[in-house]
Length: 125
Image (cartoon, rainbow, N blue to C red; front, top):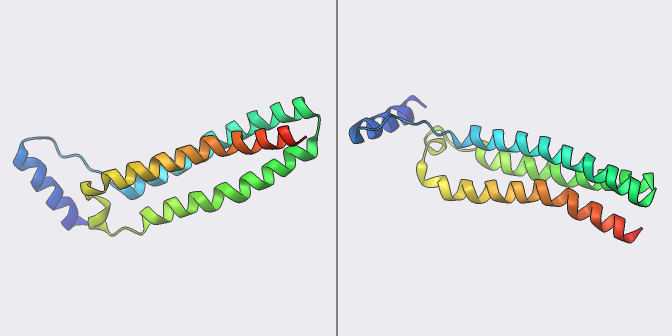
């Protein structure tokens, strides 16, 4: 890892700008953790709304099981994809577009899945 950091610091000092350290592994891990927190809050909000709208508690529990079964493997996949990077790859700025693509997909999933499934169950009831 020191080699990668030294290479990055040398590149930054040559351009006269302050060195900035990007570790894609940590950034994705932070995104996954925050997405799970937001996802959980949104799911609770959507589930409470569905219970009030339909009066079916079992509907909310079914939605919870489906959402948990769907989000945990997806988040693990996103995180594993980035934690498996080598030390050199973890600071490679050429991975910015791939990181942004995965970050966007993670957040679309975390925000969209609770709303989509709860709405589907509510309409089915």
